[in-house]
Image (cartoon, rainbow, N blue to C red; front, side):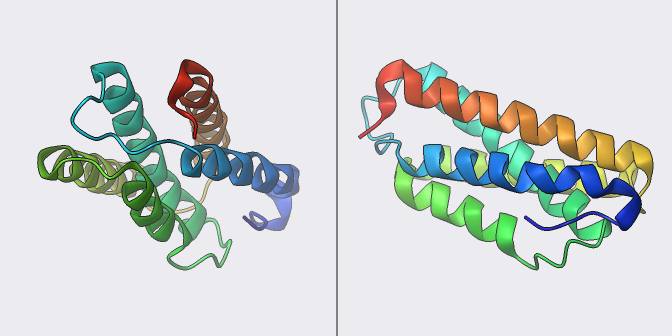
Length: 136
């Protein structure tokens, strides 16, 4: 992921955590018609996290560009949700992005802490999805 501003250097280790999160997401099977609501809800939570992280990481100078938006697109491609579920995932991503953009217009210690929390939560959710038998 990269580094936050130098005062937030401890966040560098989160790059590996989020890489693991993305790897777990990519190991999921497509949602398909038989998807259970738990998987859909967890994917929706993960979409929100990716949207929030997309904004927070950008304002804190990580120079990642469209990385988190692209990971969202990748997740949708892997999950192959129905059109309705895809629209919900995209809405969750966008809503979280704008909610965090309004709440955190600039990088602060609070924004950095929130990014860390979200990345931790995202990793947990991805691990739960993988552990619940939705892996390939």
